[in-house]
Length: 71
Image 1 (cartoon, rainbow, N blue to C red):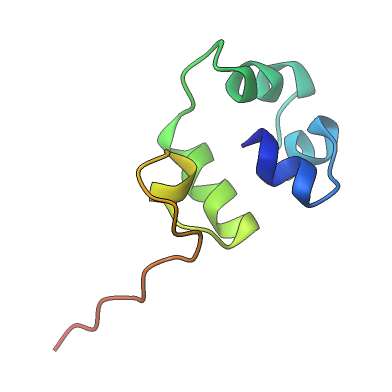
Image 2: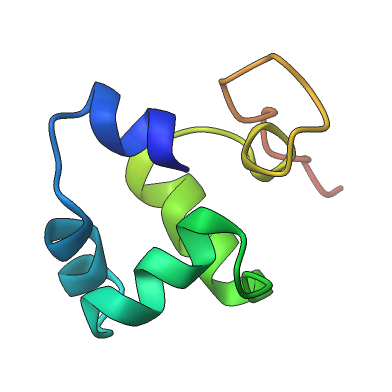
């Protein structure tokens, strides 16, 4: 999370505002002090246009997977 934030030249306050929370709460997520809720992971993935797996460290592929087409 920190690398993505810094790569996009954003402050913790900027991202906390996107998530509608106090900077101190976001700081705890970013530092690993608190477990990051799923809704935050999803919102950050959408914001940074990366996959949730990338944010969770499960892949090095930044781009989201293509949507599944339902028949």
